[in-house]
Image (cartoon, rainbow, N blue to C red):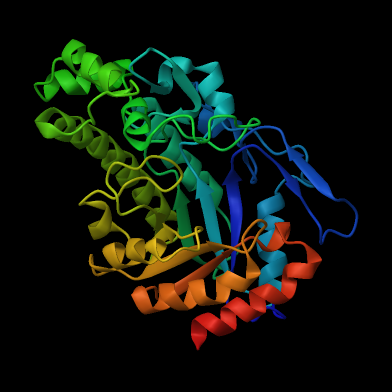
Length: 355
């Protein structure tokens, strides 16, 4: 990390399932994180009486792997940001499909817990509090919130075979949640659930109309209200655990976007300290995302991958373009996954961004 000239490490404290390469690890080359996990001690008394309960990462050594990592980084003088993945949990969505995002055809997305569900919001807030509890004083300088909102139809995982199958307007329609809690919120907002689902099914067709007009705006408002409630409860827990620590929100300036970086709401820009915007494509259009986010007046953190298949020859120009568009910070993905022949690339990108 020092050789790359980086300022801090963003360390996963809660994370979703993954199979990851570990090229720099001294003793292994893969880690199989079979399910979402809390990389801190899971205290049974905190979760008594609840259905949504995290589990520990039994593939990681020790009872508190994230706490041990924070201590090691603190001893080395390296600042840490705590990375919290919230509503993305395939294990819990599979156990309790009624709490998962459900599309207009009645299909559930088990990886996506729906923020409209009270149980989900309470789970995310408690998860955040437990993730940060008892970490070494002064070691964690900030918190990064991923999936603090709704995930939708697109999900990279489980040997994904959906890329390119549906146009953008179809994916938008298939990402509108129609679970029982969302339908109840629709009714409270004056939306007829049957009419809304019929529109969504038409829009999900190959030649269907985009979800827009007044009904589309009303559906989006319901989604944003649920995301605001979830984020508000999580922020309260974070700020109680780490008073004064700045909070970065994984977010996208397109309000309709779902996923790890959900569409920004009006309240979101008023409640967090930094916006972390996904900037993985290296084309010039990506800089427009930074410009749109920067107009909100918050610092913008450009999230860039140095992994394959990103072209090293394009990344230097890319990060300079993002800086010129208004990015005040660069986050590089991902030190633990990076092949040794790409380590020098991190130092190059850090230098280009600071130039």
